[in-house]
Length: 201
Image (cartoon, rainbow, N blue to C red; front, side, top):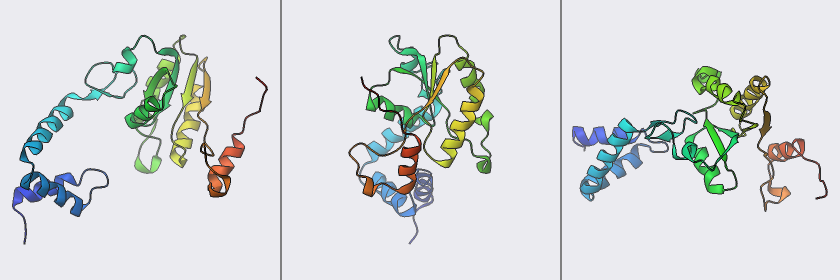
């Protein structure tokens, strides 16, 4: 048995989503068509509107419908700090964790010569322009602790040297509440290499 052409097109289209294979896409498509057509129409309308209207903030490059995102518009943010992240999802994670009150810059990826992603694709020239602002005192490199993320952080560190800013890297290592015997070797090695001095307060 085969589905109708439009049903097959819907199943194929749903497979563009991360982690959605043929079977999952088929279940989603059949659910929307058999049981929830109203939601399917709402989903179609919202998806089209988002695809047409959501762009990138002119300052930090996160997703927004406006020229500047809500975070960049907040006057209470500490404008002396810029946290560099790989994706808009990383911004959400940092915001939900709380504690950071500075601004952001989203690379929208990481350096990956194999995939043809170079510095010009990540807007690094725009980051350097922002870092040159006298109001900026520190750039925090918060790229992921992957090979590509570390290479991106190293590249940024080297290119930020001419700017009169402090460049820091977020700590990686043993998770809070973790036990050493269950931590993998590379994470433990990274924790030791990134150790800091214990000082009296």
